[in-house]
Length: 149
Image (tube, rainbow, N blue to C red):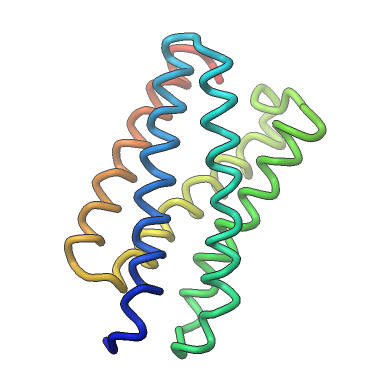
């Protein structure tokens, strides 16, 4: 890895971990029935679209493989979908399995894919992003069981 590449790689790692921490906090807010906190954390998550798009646009500079593009595209698509369903159209879709199942699949694929993006910054970032991802998975399942959302 060249010195020019490290800030770019670190951005991807920080984005992966940041998203996981924000979403873990969001699910905790959901568990404690704090809808305003949940909403604000969701808005913070939406802003991660911009660094993800930056990483996607610049990926060609470092000759990233197809999977890297796919990982970032999945994250961008999920953020757009989240914005549309929860913030723009405000559709109550979580009880509708036709929408909820692909939504949840995209959610896990997008966040899980970011582990690969984080790995470019080194093993420590890969491990940190994987551990925080697993925390999000646990909290999202727990929140779904406890709240049905």
